Length: 497
Image (cartoon, rainbow, N blue to C red):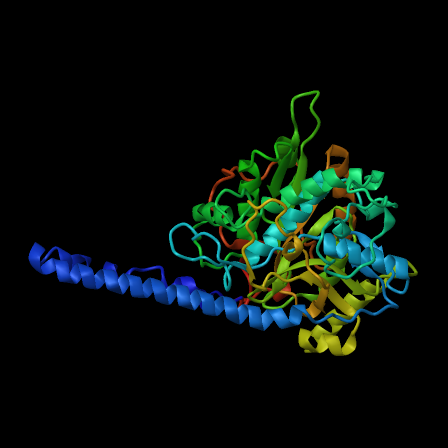
């Protein structure tokens, strides 16, 4: 969302700021009425801010709520790729697996009615916090990979409420015994139920870490507080690169995840020695798990079609945990795509597709023309722009349904904002080495231009990890294309190398 609609703009300055000098120039007797008048002005300004905040929340609920209830149409003849897994939708079993996997992702959206954020009276992040929410979703998926067994899905049948997606429960996921003895109040628990219960407790605890309250380690209050060192405050616009550094600080400060670290790439470069320094522990302790975040920019004002192949290739990797991206001033969490990805004589069709789009751009066709040529080329995403009431996680068995999305959504890849942050996860040292190999191979698809980012031996530039990151991130552009690029409608700023 465009930060210009943020309600914080009218709450940053108090009316009293304009009267401070006058207070020193009047007597104590004459000052009292003015103080009362100023107090009334402050109260009126606060009331106006709260009203505007509620109106913005209501507008976003109306604007995005009806679209979330609509189902995107998916082509059954084309596979869906989501976070490293491929699903053939023409097969009923794989289609159900896709739906189970999608509904298991944590969906973190705008919320309203939470305790006021520090430094103001905002009780909602509607209108300005979408990039923070997409960052939360990426981190949440990384945490589920870190804490849950491989292939875990949310056992919605374990809850008393109706399944969000109305999916048929698989026998292995069911928390009910196969028989219920008549006249007995106590039911025998199946082995599946006994195995699911600890995982559900971990799932619920993970959700609680993103709660909208000051004590939650990855909640909106904590992220806003950590953003202060970057010159940000509640109501400001947060770019994908800023959020990457905020997530790094949040995980580093959390006592709940001692064996997990976050590394943020510098200038589109992952320095291997820096990752090693973060992950290594004294023997015999193993390497810490690591989430690698790479802020990049894939074009000027619009997405460079030469990078489409690489974006898709990265989303096919199991180590990829998603992309903090979106449309201009409208952040989304990209989790996969549907499009042609078959190999023909060693060349993938998405490679041919990207080259075709580059030719169209060369001849003056803008990205808005691409969907006319390619109908089956869409990114899957989770949208944070639906404003929901805050959930009180202090309640026993608090409801989880609002943290899981009902329907997968998709959009044309041509509408993707060029500014984004790509996330990866490695469980241990061998997993990180494998990550380097497969990601490097995927990046080779953009070798005709410049790679989106690179791996390098050694250390990056010496800097404090808590230093204020700027909105400027590295962007590599062909020499023949170097010119001033307008990024006013984009999600972040960048510098040319």
